[in-house]
Image (cartoon, rainbow, N blue to C red; front, side, top):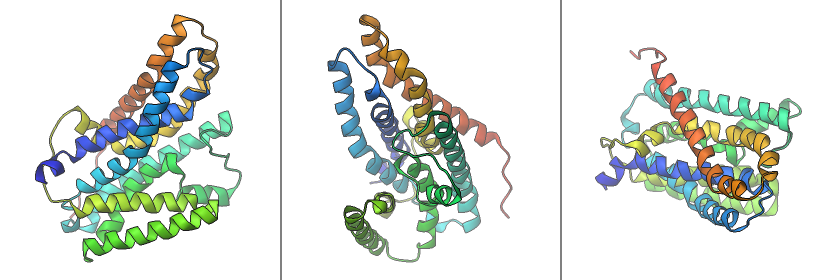
Length: 276
């Protein structure tokens, strides 16, 4: 188990790459009028599989990597987990609102027209924004409930997820809440298995440590790229379009990851107040 815990950042990084891929393909790639169908179909299958397994794997790995969370003071949790990730969540929401203003409804998100709709978006974010929200909120919830038996927490999360899922099946307005409760369950399962351990290094681990900025940029960046490229790529012909069909998802994922890694490095250089 210790080896798995040490690999948690790398597992989170690998899952996050799949999440960005699924966001890209399902968000705008399939809107392009591809003349050849084999390559887009292959990407569609890959994105479908990625979208099914990646979010549970990502949140479980994030929880798995927080073995020492319960022993840390609240000020440290707020400083290292909650505040930075809330900042990236604000960046994600702001960038998404700009994209909605410029491009109109994208990825199933309607424009925000008034304050109540903005508050609903902030407090119950849809799937594309929910991961960064979870990275800020779930560690705080886990720390708050640290005194309770973890199996009891997991059982409570299962119950809550089932109730929310049933409510969403009857009333679609509960769908966002149901998604958040499922995400909380995945996180708590990972946290239940977590033990303190030194994480391994590597490229995937670096992606995992930069999860907040990468997740924050995934929706607005891929939507903006789609708004710029859908018509242009649809107008291509012959081998050039086939090449674009193969490479476009990979290049978009690389763009989001590189931008997120740069944001993570920039955030790490910002001086933080010292906790006394």
